[in-house]
Amino acid sequence: MNIERARNVLFLLIVSALLSCASGKGHLDLARASSKPGLDLQNSRFGILPLRSYPADIGSVISVVIGNELKDTGIEITETAEMIRILKEQNITPRSMTQSSDYRMIGKVCHVDYILVGKAIITTLSEKFVRTGVAVADFQETTAEIVDTTSGEVVLRATVERPPKRKWHNAEIIGEALAAAIKKELKGFKQP
Image (cartoon, rainbow, N blue to C red; front, side, top):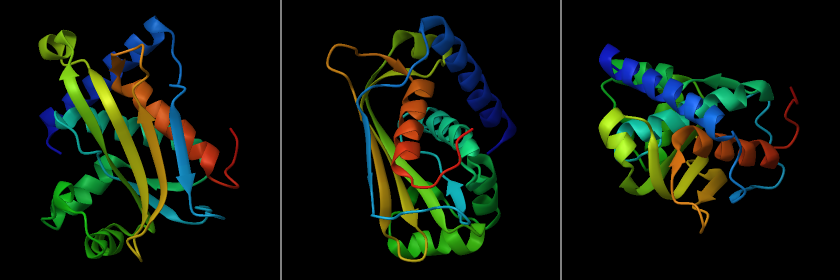
């Protein structure tokens, strides 16, 4: 990630956090998750890749928020920026990876047992986003998946659907809702 892009993502996180505080921070009630029975990520290395979205910065913000929210679980996390740096050094573009063999390669290169991938389906960007870059959009559905890098199997899937009476959300709230659903589904995580 180049310096200007990193600054843009940081700016989006800061503004999203401010908007979240100003509007009453909270998780979306429609977040849900499901996982393989008995899933326990303790003693595993966990990497986070940016969620696919257009514009890409929104997916990056959601991924960073999920990583920050999962830090208190005791899971060893390789954050998004570090994952991107490692993959870039190997001339690997994570956005195009979707096969089991791709996940195995990422696991080997980044030394992680599981990776978080996903996508944010956005139908409309708010005027505020267009004018200022604040990560506010009409999220139709946002999904985060935890993939086992040895098998390529999805072991946990968390989804946030848009509530019917509310159209606009900032990316931070979407990330928090996904992280809350993931935490709830995981067994044996450490409470803060």
